[in-house]
Amino acid sequence: MRQQEHEGHRDRMRARFAQGGLAGFAPHETLELLLFYAIPRQNVNPLAHRLLSRFGSVDAVLRAGADELAQVPGVGAHTAALLTLVPELARYAERERKSARAIITNYREAKAHCAGLFGARPQEALYVISLDIQGRVLHDSQAAAGTLDAIPIYPRTVVACAMRHNAHAVVLAHNHPGGVAEPSDADIRVTDILRDALAAVDIRLMDHIVCADGECVSLAQWRRARSAPPAGRDREDDPYGQTEGHEQLEPK
Image (cartoon, rainbow, N blue to C red; front, side, top):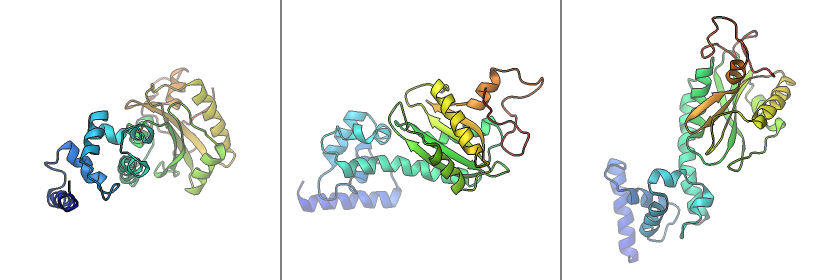
């Protein structure tokens, strides 16, 4: 494609988007429009088709990790950064919208809130959800990220996140990409270490939510299920995290 035709094509694509959003765009055109901003002086149509051929859909392209994207010929560091940034920005904005009104007072609310933190991201990550004394979400902080099966977790980092946002209590959340939403022995050990580190600065660890494949498990609820709760106690809706005397994550 000659330079003049190339620039005209980009101008027409941008005009279409300005007039009607992405309605009517083919999958490869959607990727082309995005790739314009990573590769300013090159025909990106072939690359858009290669990405779709490799991953199968626009959604799969945007869920791919930087290492996977780099395996596609023509994808450099800037392109991989842009493609991975877009879904992260969408999740960030969604968390801001939810956090503006979110409150966590029971297992169901904790799991629902934490499910929105991860989407289908391929890397494991740990979030610190800071709560005020009423259980209102003050901030969701990503405290660690790593490979598919391990993340480095430092108690001082988790404590710093909670203190930075003046947390009265904390809910932790991490994901098991490609795994199951079931606490591992390592998850339990790390949770107890972090509970003690937070308690040292008078911040209560209310729960640790483990997410995988769209499902979430509350470690506090998981532990309670393995002990005999008081008669008539509703495990799912039992409030926690608001005042002293409510359920919280305790070692077993």
